Structure formats: structure tokens, C-alpha cells
Length: 292
Image (cartoon, rainbow, N blue to C red; front, side, top):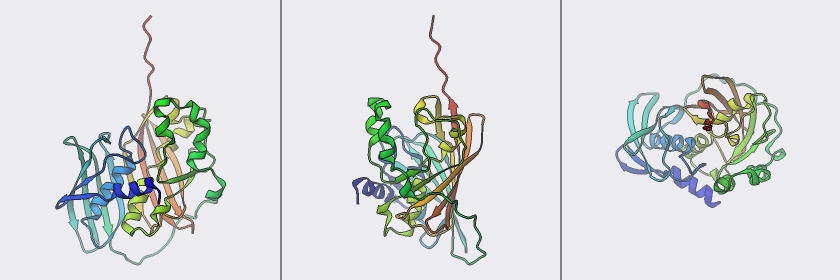
């Protein structure tokens, strides 16, 4: 197991402070300037799970309220909204500097039998046909400002292989529909709860980027300010995130400085494992006028 994989597992193993009160590590994850959205989603989900011993999450809905500060821990307060015969509901509030930065509602369901149906998995070339994230980023090293280069190149715990990746600095306008393969080998043997939290963490990767594609935009051009505003996720099947999963992404709408994004996550057997949706800020940067 790599050090970064071990760090992610430790990051999700939140500390209990009191009944329904937990503390999570703020540093680590995908970014160093602010807390990665998937980081707080996964920690909040784990906090909820610590109060639900006998059933699995089937859906979560969350709002990002303030940027997270990676220099300090995050406090998670769980509200036991309902314990029913079939469904359990939890609300989790994430707090830093005495203010809410994020809140999440999650619903848990006992295992029941029912009718089965799903959309067919897209016919996409497997992960062996595409470059790993470090190999994909290597040609752009010299274009990254020195102060951001270490963060750009540092090792991450989640393997990502984008299907037909775009140029980071000179992207063409293209379809919002896109795909990537992802996994975390160190997820092998982890509990079903940890598998859910790891997939929740990874589900925030590249999702917002779908709405930038039709406009020929990426984060690296310095033309657009982006931030996740909310996040929803539905779990459909047992997860083993040590195996490759295909993330099918699209963005059916952009407007009003926001973009709406959706995702379908399939395992390699073609089973639909989870579905996601997210609205994100995509505000144009306004160039400062130079005084004459």
C-alpha cells in the first residue's frame, strides 16, 4: 500500500469526540489550497455511518457552504433525524472556525428484494488503453507556474485514466459527454462502509469539468472560477473500489454562471454501482482594467 493510499484511509477514519460528534483531518486529499469537496463528502458520510450500525446508505444530498481550511480539523455533528423500520435518516453539519462549511443529509435502507433494471454500460475502451494521470500531466509541467508545480505533480491515492483527454491549456469546444476509469487498489479488503466512503470521495473528481467542455474551457487557462455548490449521490450495488470503475459524465445545462453535471458509475461487470449529480459555479474571471 502506498503512503498516499494509507493517508486517505486514515483521513476517512474519523475520530469520535462525543456522542454524535466527530473530528476529521482537514489536510490531505486532492488539493492543498482548500479542502477537496470529495474529502468532506466522504468524512461526513463516515460520521453518519458511525451512528447507523445495521444498514447501508442508498442516497446522500449535500451543500458546500464555505471553502474548507486544510490547516485545521473539521468537526462533524450528526443529527439522528429518524430511525425507522426500513429507512434511517441522518443530517451531518461540518464546522470550521465556528461556522458551517458543509452539510449533508443521508438515507440508509435495509436490504430488500425488488425488480431489477438499469441502463446498459457504454461501450468504451478499457483502462489499459489510456494514460495514468501522472503520464498525462507530464507534457504540461513547464506550463505550470513553479509555485503550483509540486501540487500538480504530487502522487494521489486514486488512479484516474481519462478517455480521450483534452489539452489542458488549449482545449477545443467539444461534447459535454465524457468518460474516465478510476480505482484505488488499496481499497481491496476494506469494509462495505469504507468502500462507499472511498467512492463518495472519488465521485467529485472531474464531475464539474463536464460543464466546461462545450465552452472550450479548463481550470488551467485562468478564465473561469469554479466551485462545487452541491452534490448528490445514489448507491445502487455493492462496491469494490479496488477494481476499475467507469465514470460516464455529462452536463445537460450551463447558464447563470452555473453548470449542472451528472454521472453514472459502472463496475467492470457492467453493473450500475452509483449515480451522481452536481451543480457548480463557473463564473468568468473579469480582467482588471489598466489605468491609463
